Length: 130
Image (cartoon, rainbow, N blue to C red):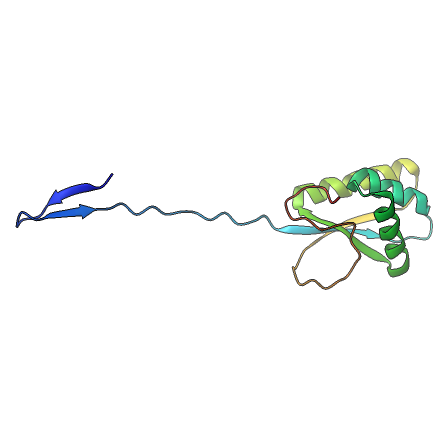
């Protein structure tokens, strides 16, 4: 509610308060990259993509083939803590299966360089790629 104040001449003035809003920036996103190797079975890669990144079988197969042909592919974009967790989970599954499957993190530059195929829509809300 406005506050009224009288000046020296008896006129009323309205005093207003200025509200400032802080705009929150979106968290920086990181690419989760899957790397090709000559030893990890293709079927294992598909299962890992389905389990860790919640891809459909067809999307997981498509991404696995992209990585096989190109050497590396982007699985998705995530805030750092989520990307780190996904990479650790892939590493743990690979270690349990005694295969050298490698998954890494790289900052997203936002330049759309098309470096890798993706497993979905690269959502930036921190959710899993569908």
